[in-house]
Image (cartoon, rainbow, N blue to C red; front, side, top):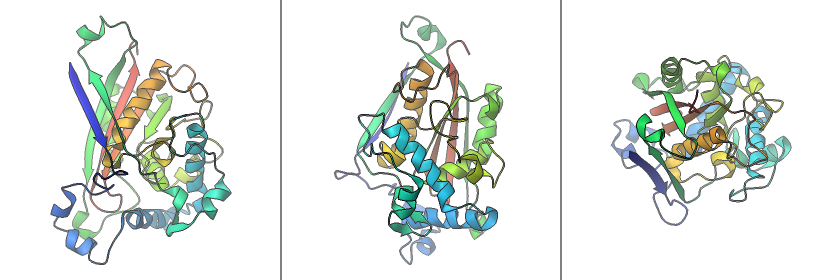
Length: 287
């Protein structure tokens, strides 16, 4: 049996989001932060490049926030439980063009834990268990100072996880996607293979991400955009909500019917510099 736990309190005095102890050790940091590059600006670079390359719009990014807010409205613990519209996202203050305030995650204290056991131990448990079917991890480097800002490390971690699990993106019933910003979700969905590269904006439109009956419900606790984001520990919360969905224990208004396969994905670092991705495929115990 193993206990895995992560927590942070950036809202009440802990290390602020993005301030990992290892980031200042990167050899490029003097060039990147010389003129005060902020975390939202870092992600705004990726969003603007995606818009330039593929015609993605701010309204399409806003659809991701709207879906998260609908889910948060069912969660009594969500930091931002109010539903918002695309227009309200676009009318919120610009933080770093093209990202508005409501394109950005919340900052909260929080944490979580999971217990991982062997199949022999799991067989004796009374509570419904969830199996790890596949996993993948991958870094994305700065490629000598010429990074492509339109993709993430999920380009490699996703295929590895799907191959180990023996399933495809079409088999997934629910996804927990790390959502530091709306652009993070959009690029990750593309890289994991849920839609072709460049078509993420069209994919997330028309309620695709909204539980319980969207084509691909995501972050049904409200995610980092609306529920909680304890600095760099957001990946833990993604696993926990995926387990809830597979157990049928999510909030009733967002429980995906007959949820049998779920994907949880975490992102570290920064989208437009060096970063890493980790993907888990989880299934019901009889999957």
